[in-house]
Image 1: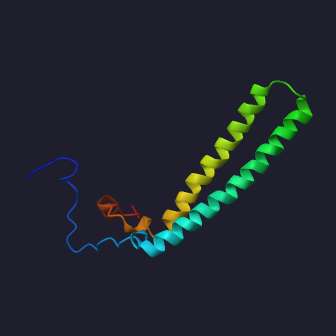
Image 2 (image 1 turned 45 degrees about the vertical axis):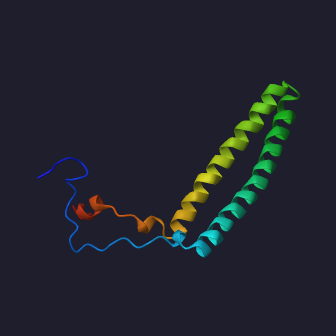
Image 3 (image 1 turned 180 degrees about the vertical axis):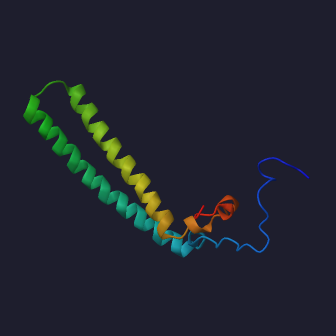
Length: 115
């Protein structure tokens, strides 16, 4: 008997096979990605508004301090918001398309949630 991580997984005889992802269908995938990019465009507009508000508040509270402070503030706010939007958009894409259910996880079949 061969041992090691990929070989000592529990037997999956009679276990249901994972369903194919709906993202494998080109028509559905194009609609799902179009929805994702529409979300990203909306978040880009929201990010620009947030950057403008943050810079306005910074100027109102401190006046013109340094151009580097304004560049760093704008970059930090924009990066944080767009990173959050991109990752959450991918989570919504994966969950909404059924891609999460299309994986084969032999480990989760051996875990009893009632233990």
